[in-house]
Image 1 (cartoon, rainbow, N blue to C red):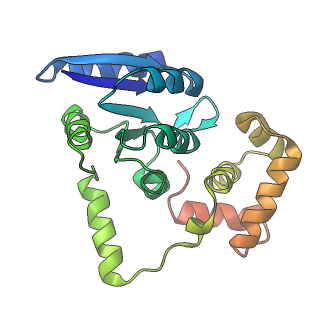
Image 2: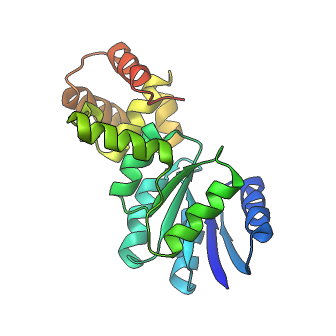
Length: 210
């Protein structure tokens, strides 16, 4: 019997994941959480084989929650499920402690395979990402500039590049306008840029926005 905790703030996604695993061979017991607080309670109380975690939880950064989760359950494998492409978040997810990363447009077979791999203590990387990583290593590619950003700075950069104002970003992330402006100043300095237009151009060129 496999015990999987599904953490996603959309009920339709949780229901879809349950159906996928119900149709897979073997018996699976599920837990569900729609908020980080609820998920943390279930993680503390339950004995789970794996967690399937949405990277976006109603404004809360899933990577921040992942780090908190790994502090209390360092050996619990977490598979990140995201609507964002691997170029945007996969590297950061693995650095934060994820055991695997799949996008929401992945096939059912790929999702089941990914969960089974992380439960076995292995890592799941899609063939496309694996090929890119090998290519970067062989080419001796230096880390892109945005890799120097913190997870929060990276998130602010993506929102700026998608056309959001400081006030809109503050509402989305439940932070003050002043705090967002501080993050903006920091990330501009780290990336050696001066304007939002430069940020937007960079983000689009590097496939960092949807």
